[in-house]
Amino acid sequence: MKATITIHPNDIIDKIDPRLYGSFIEHLGRAVYGGIYEPGHPTADDMGFRGDVLALVKQLGVPLVRYPGGNFVSGYCWEDGVGPRRARPRRLDLAWSSIEPNEIGIDEFQEWAKRADTEVMMAVNLGTRGVEAARDLLEYCNFPSGTKYSDQRRANGFEAPFGIKYWCLGNEMDGPWQIGHKTAEEYGRLAAETGKVMKWVDPSIELIACGSSHSGMPTFGDWERTVLRHTYDVVDYLSLHSYYGNRSGNTGEYLACCRDMGRFIETVVGICDEIKAERGAEKTMYLSFDEWNVWFHSNEQDKKQEKWTVAPPLLEDVYTFEDALAVGCLLITLLHHADRVKIACLAQLVNVIAPIMTETGGSAWVQSIFYPFLHASCYGRGLALRTAVDCPAYDAGQYGSTPYLEAAAVYDEAASELRIFAVNRSPDASITLDLAADGFAPLQLLEHLVLRCDDLNAVNTAAQPDRIKPELVCAADGAVLPPMSWNVLRFRCV
Ligand code: AHR
Image 1 (spheres, helix red, strand yellow):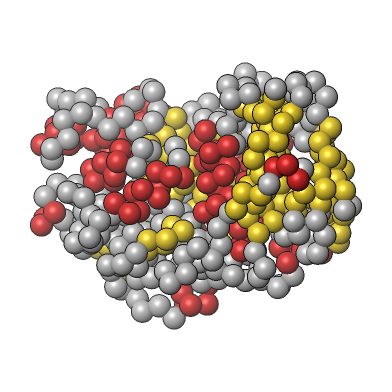
Image 2 (cartoon, helix red, strand yellow):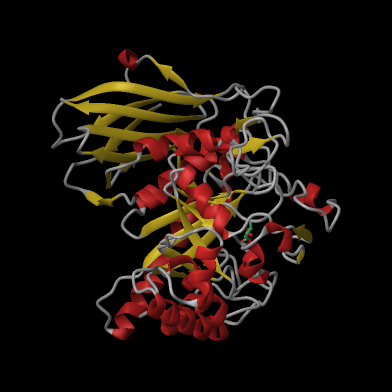
């Protein structure tokens, strides 16, 4: 089959914010304990952080990592996680029916983040707590010295402030599953007051208010309107969350789930602009898609998990090759919305619905979804271009008629490179790509990276870590995208 992608160097969506390639570590399952932290592991460093995991995280080039939750944060007392370890309490984590040992807290996590070449995006507890705890935590983290909490940080061995810039005002506060779930009115008022006080402590921070937990929430839309009416002046971003999965076993439909993500973003943008107009505001509200991924494989298994243990193996989705294609399509969708989505977090990073897996005491390896994320993070920097795709379509069930080709174009002026990210969703036909790129200097295909596999259900495991991995195909053969494949085409503008 043939497809045409039409682009022009002046038809720019926006400069891609590097924070589009953020991720997330929650105190959940084996993300922290047995994931990033495992004293005694052969690769552990002086603080007990696993070196093999750090190396893989660095490879991904993740600019920020949201922490410490997630649902966990809505019951969290940050004070439990600082100071001498022997004095730290073990606590019930009601979000995940687990025991939290508090061996890792913000002191250690910000140190891990430095070692991983990334930044912490911190969340405050607006479930069981409020203005006071958020103010104190920010003072602990960012105030230089001479006050109760800043001096406590220094006494704990951290002389320099952490300088955490991004702060989430709670997590999924619209969800009945959330500890301290709130109505939009209750949350909007609390978020506005908490944000106001936090910016008094440190005016340089940026704040993220909770939007809906997903677009299927019964309160979706009204929630955003109400929350924004309370918080518009004080917050900088509104959050979106969404998880996908192939529950019906229909691959064609599943691989079109990015259409839902696109609609979700566009609807939230519309609501933000409605409130902007209503208020006659100058300021534009940006979006933080701070939880997105595939999550469904582990759902049944997790129901059987024994409660009240430390670091149980929860949400350990083993990702198939098919999931990697879905994640590729979701990344392309984020690029299409680079004008409004400035932060996004692949949820999560290690062991919990994650691109990186570990065996406690054993090896670390990468899952199928690692690769599209790696490629987008490496090559999806520069300007996102509007991309018109002309290609035959198929019936994608609930998502309707959908082109076989999903594609985004990025122009990296500094490197003089044009990059095309593309998923061929056809089960049996290759796509021969024609690039209509008026306005560019002549383009020379430098490299064509492909992720393909003969089995949609293939997975990487500790025993077979390279079952799914990308390959370089001969650029001289032109841009031919194999059936069911993720592709990165790098063109030099000569
Ligand atoms: O990422 C797993 C969970 O999904 C998070 O804790 C929560 O915010 C969302 O529901």
